[in-house]
Image (tube, rainbow, N blue to C red):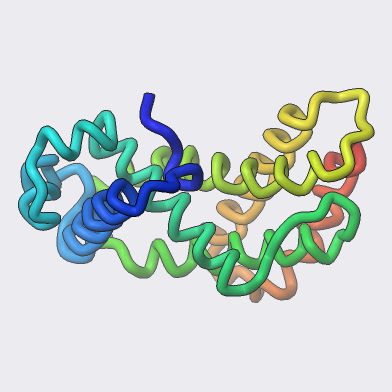
Length: 192
């Protein structure tokens, strides 16, 4: 299994993965994910199919890496990290998730076949949020529960609540809903 993009140190591997991710992102500006082939991605990235498969098992793995990478980039731009002790850091993570989901859905082609996009987004986002939470929780482990269980539960809670907020017609601003989501999340985070 290929290593996560977050763990890649070799600049050549990073460059190739960035080319592939940019190609997919560009193609998704005009077409539904379902309609994009690996060949089209490699053509747009100017790499061959063998190179693609050296880095990703399929276009779904590429999509997951794209979502995770872009989300982590947003967190980096905002200097958001979770330290496990301050609720403000969890609030910043919730707000970033709200903003990222709003941006991502605005950037994709809307069509009835885009439904395949949702489970892929869900998987990638919960993995990205989980990674941030685990990094913060392992700085001061003191729980009877494994950190992975707490982080996974919290990641699903954040993503699920934000997703529900996003799809609620006439939803309030992210700044209004995020503190309410945080109230629901705090009992989970306190387990760590």
